[in-house]
Image (cartoon, rainbow, N blue to C red; front, side, top):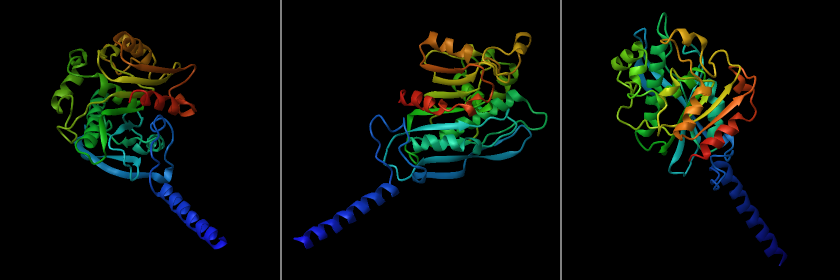
Length: 312
């Protein structure tokens, strides 16, 4: 009898060890109500693909460049339809790197999403900020199309989100709300550049694939005109300090005298319009916060994830 018990113990320990190894090498099975709203994968279970080329386009200075991204996703994942989040760094359309958002992309991947942080075209030399925004939006659209053009990444095309900080948020907001219906109210420079560079969709790569998005994450971002928001357009989650002097929460004073100025209407104007139109939104306005308040916010990542989760 003792030999039988000992043998049973050895067999049990063997299967327990195999089970433990499987848990380390394979994804945790998503639990309803937890995946996409909490950390369900550890960092060793995340596959990182760095410097993946998603497109190619021409800068304002005439240089043709590759556009690349870092992609984070659960390894060996069996989920057939996964939400996608495409992130863009800040830097005034003049500096910064896709690696600036690697940590946030990892956070979303550990929650079960496919997440990417992208490079995009900057202003060069005496280039135009307005043209740079159009170029960056075109690049972000190409990045989304990279994922939706086939089933390589098992993306749920109905649950695609874009977002970013500062310039990256400006890019994401214009992706969502600048379209053919409101171009007539845009500065002529924007209208002409869009017409010359492939229209709203642009020509940065992956033509013909879906570029539809469900929502936007704006961290210290703004729109050229808040009233570009129309019924039925993407949902919005914003983080913004009410003391942000770089991208104001309301209207930049300069725009009062310069109607052809830069992108100066912030979430304090955008979100009331979303409410009027019945578009789901959440505004995390941080009292006394400056332009970089997000980077000292301990609850913002969880809050934005909750917003996305509730929209899936």
